[in-house]
Image (tube, rainbow, N blue to C red; front, side, top):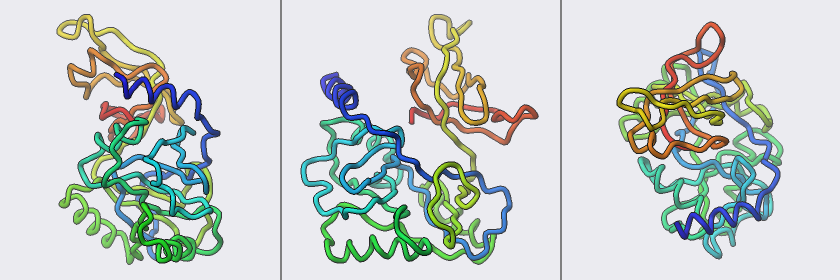
Amino acid sequence: MKSLFYSIIFFACSVYAAPNLMLAKEFTGQDIQGWAMSEKLDGVRAYWDGKQLISRQGNAFTPPKGFTQNFPNFPMDGELFSARGEFERISATVRSSKGDWRGIKLYVFDVPQAKGTLYQRLALAQQHLQRFPQANFAIIEQIPVKNEAHARQFLQKIEKMGGEGVMLRNPNLPYQSGRVNQLLKLKGTQDAECVVTQHHKGKGKYSGMLGAVSCKNEWGEFRIGSGFKDSDRKNPPKIGSTITFKYRGFTKKGTPRFATYWRKY
C-alpha cells in the first residue's frame, strides 16, 4: 500500500502530454517482403524524450537514480523489458516509485526524430551505445523479411521460446504517429487495449462480484465478461483504467469478437 501511495502521488505530480507514438495494426496478409521484423517484447512501452522516460499515457517513470545517466539527448521509442514471462513484475516495478529495476532495460525499436530508414535511425542509437556501453538500453534486432512464410517461421521460433509475437515494419518510411499501416503485429492470438467505462454486476455464482465490464477503444464500446479470475471479479479494474484483452476477429458492427479479459495494462 505504501508503494502504491507513493506511485499515486508521483503520477499526480508528474503528468506530461502523452507522446504521439506509432501504434501497430494487425497483420492480415499484407505484402511484407523487404520489411523488417523483430520480436514483440512483452514489456511496458516507454518513450525517452531526451530528458525523461514517459509512459504511453504521459506519466513520467521513476527509475533508480542514474538509470538514464548515459541515455542520449535525442528521443527513443522502446519497451521496458527484462525477460520473457516477466510482464507482471516489469509492470509492477516501473509503475512504482520504489520498484526494483534490476535487469530492466529500455529496448529501443525506433529513433523518432532521426532521418533516413529505420536501420539508419537505429544506427544513431547504436553509435551512442558504442560510446556508452554501460547505458541501460539496447537495440532490438531488426531482421529483413523474405516473405510471409519467413515471418511465420520466425513467429514459431519466438513462441517456442515463450515470446509473445512479431512486429513487422516498413523500414523505408519515416516514424509516424498514430495507428499506421507501416507497423503490423503478427501473433498466434490477437490482443488489444481498451479503457474500462462501466462495471456490470455479476449473477449466480458471481453475485456480489463483477460480472462484466464495458470497454471502449477506437473500435467502439463493447462488453467483456470472460477471462476474469475470482480475484479480478472481487477487485475489478477501475473505471478509466486500461486493460488488455484477447479476441478473434471482428463482428459485423466492427467490434472485437469473443473479447476475453487478459490483464491490466
